[in-house]
Length: 118
Image (cartoon, rainbow, N blue to C red):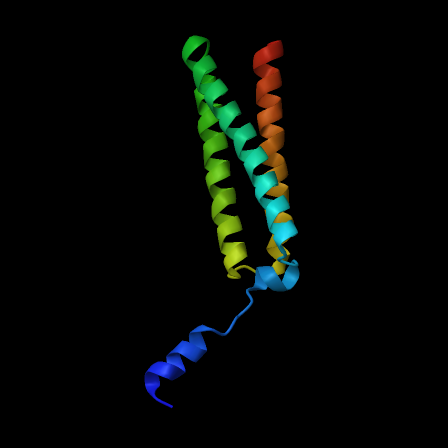
């Protein structure tokens, strides 16, 4: 075999990542995963925009809350990216889920604080 044909055979081999080994990576699972990510991103983006607008109108502290929310979301996206590549072990799954839950909780509490002036 020539070197070029050997490379083409090697490129065709499927090497599952750690994410694929832990979770069944079927079409339905990926679809559900994308729907959940989309809903969370819409919720976080809406809260971020709402906090910036209210921070400009009312108090500057809302802008700092929005920046903290953005920083948490950036860390979460990076962790999920590395986890899907297989660079993180499965024990980080609970950390990623906990961080995602805390982001959604922070969004809900921020909206409640602004709306009900708690």
